[in-house]
Image (spheres, rainbow, N blue to C red):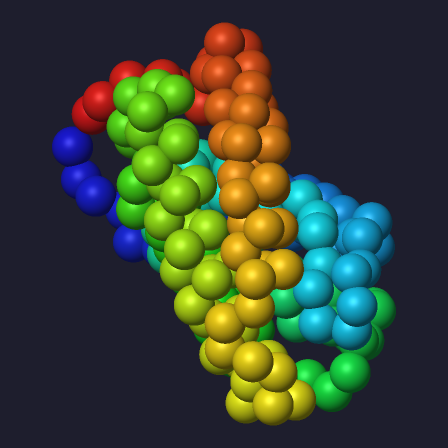
Length: 176
């Protein structure tokens, strides 16, 4: 079985339309964030990019994250554009693709992946980007509380969505 390159995959109408729909959903969900102060937000816009990575692989997931971030900024600019958040968006799609693409979807695997996402993005990169932009503290107790509270919600949402997709054979739930 020949491995496809990312560009070959994106030339397939099924893949291209799937990625486009997930990116559009990401942009739409970005409108429904809950802001806590000027630098802390709660939202679920990571979910379509995570699903994209799971369905199409790490590189396509990362590319979808970048496109979603830039399109989201164009449609709803909050502050000035900062490439650090685009890097984070790439990492989100890449991370979920790396750990969930063509893997058995289990609660333990989803929980571990969401934990890595929470640590890398919510507790390391986002505070770093906000520090660079605004001088916000690198460690904020409120950010830790938010991460702890949102972690189980993110796990349940992602696990439910991935199991639903697997059940209806939208995503094959098997190891290759």
